[in-house]
Image 1 (cartoon, rainbow, N blue to C red):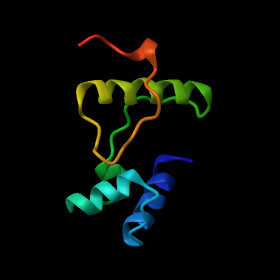
Image 2 (cartoon, rainbow, N blue to C red):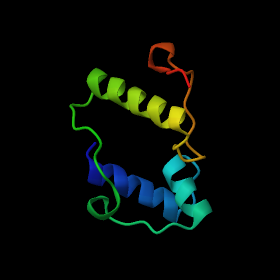
Image 3 (tube, rainbow, N blue to C red):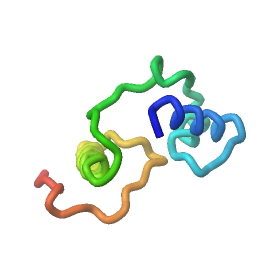
Image 4 (spheres, rainbow, N blue to C red):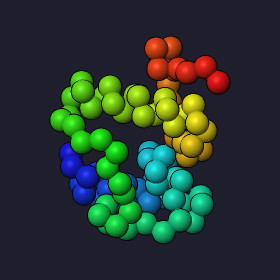
Length: 87
């Protein structure tokens, strides 16, 4: 799934007020504007879909969690001890 397809899916969730998407819930609850991916999103790390992408996703989610910069609606599962840093 590419950026644009994924964004359209989230926009459908926003329009239908569907709680399946943490992104959509954040937009709705905070009354943020939303739009096309090219205007609203920034690619953090380009990589192929699969194991490599999952590893990068876990790393960035852990980093955002550690810095307190994740949106409130986004929850991470079990913290990954090798990715945790001492505060």
